[in-house]
Amino acid sequence: MELGQPERDEALDAYVGLSADAAERRARDRGWTAVRALEPHAVVTMEYRQGRINFTVDGGRVTKCWAG
Image (cartoon, rainbow, N blue to C red; front, side, top):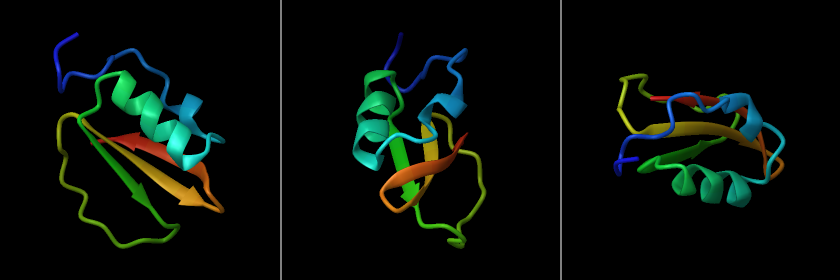
């Protein structure tokens, strides 16, 4: 796998329930070059960025995950 090209078949729901630190380690190990952890209801731009994974983190745990 090339750097910046995450596993395309990865089930992003597998991140839900992980601690924020564990989710970031997993994502980087799988080739995600940008990891963005957000608080619930955070206001963010929604432009798509290849190689980025986004997590909503509440109470130290990932509650939602999406690519871009």
